[in-house]
Length: 89
Image 1: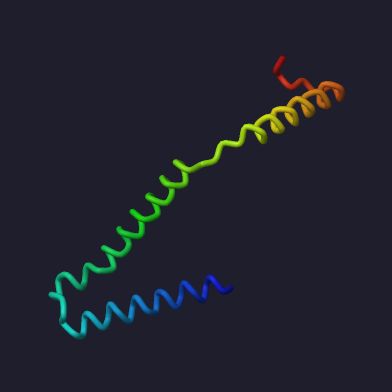
Image 2 (image 1 turned 180 degrees about the horizontal axis):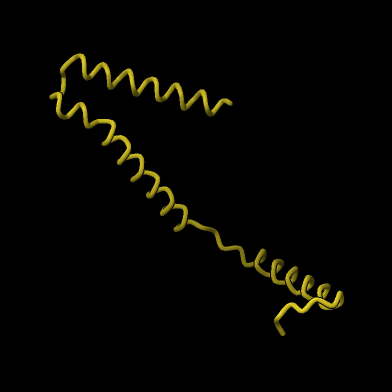
C-alpha cells in the first residue's frame, strides 16, 4: 500500500508541475504539451538501461550451479526408482 501512495504522490507532483508549466507559459505551448510523451519515453529508456545494467552485473554462482546439478541428479535417480522415464542417460 505504501508503494501505491508513493506512485500517486509522484503522479500528483508531476501533474501539478505540468499544469503549472502550461499556465505559466514559461515554455512554448507546443513543447509543454509534449512533456508527458517525453517523460514516458525517458522512463522507458531508464527501464531499458536498468535491465541492461542488471544483465551485465548478473552474478555467476558456480557453487550454486553445482548444488543445482546435484539436486537434478538426485531427482532423476528418485524418478528412475519410481519407474518414471526421465528421457536422459
